[in-house]
Length: 458
Image 1 (spheres, rainbow, N blue to C red):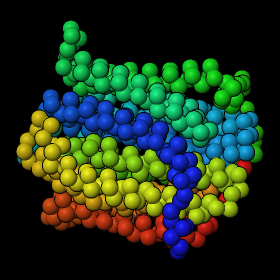
Image 2: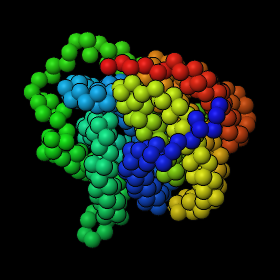
Image 3: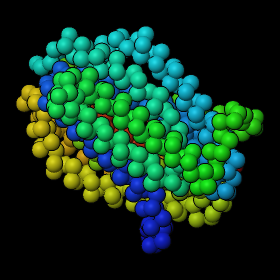
């Protein structure tokens, strides 16, 4: 493979940065404030932190179900926009709103009727720290408020995803910045009871999150409906629920594997955490600390994945011949960027857990989890780039096999066997479950190289 196929020119990276940086900033600010939120809860105690971590893991499944539900339509949106077909964009937007509301109704029903049972799957008192009864109590309190976060999140994603696919990445970023500012301020006021506000602890953290999500939703919706010249797809979007039968069929065919993929992949991550939790509540607390700081650094490859889907989707819609070479360039850039961010994360690993009011054993375990995640970051970047490259051409069933099936067929069985049938320490188990992802990287490399994903679907 020639070097010029791996690196782009100034124009290429300028276009990439115009799309990726606003997404990166929004994700970065959001995850940074989530980190501060997590630290604030962590200052209260280990049980509160573990309870919130369990609920956030469950809501993570819902969030990715929303993402998966609208992603199939998003592939068509990017290609329609590349053709300047605003009516096509309008139809895909309608589909996103409808499917996100259906998923929200199902999610609310699951949390209402089965919330406590789901929480109990993560509570094991095998470790030396943590109180199972207190953890359950705080988790239930947090979930009771976060229940009202589901619909605002779903609507925000339906709008923001469409705006990004139509090259407007700034508005979702601005809305996200406003939301995280609201979240940060009210976290401080309501968790600790400052300036005359009640001291609500984990309930205050949940109220702040829901409030910030509602603000974000309102900003995006109001802006979109008042800037119809820039976003003509919104004109008449709610006059009916009509979507042409052939397009609806194609979105369902392409989108269903993505919905199942995101649902099963996120559920797979919760099952992995549940397996790790067999080793005690201190593992839940340590992984919560680790994932909080890792998510701040992971924004680089996550944002690059979103940018990859948008850029390659638009190029496929335009019929550009350079799309395969551009896929290589995007992947190389993501990996190199994560070599740098992973190195930085590795060196801050011992510092971050010190901000938490928890036991020394939890802090030490969290430090090692962070270091392992930092070393794996370039690997995560490549498999993420491969996933979004394949998805951009509508090969959604293949991405389903590549992503979620790998978790269920390889990662989960390995974690189950190691946690239930060996006496290996949790760090060794965690390393093994991360290292197996190298197989996924190799599969992704050969699939991208084959070019089978180059396909215009609109």
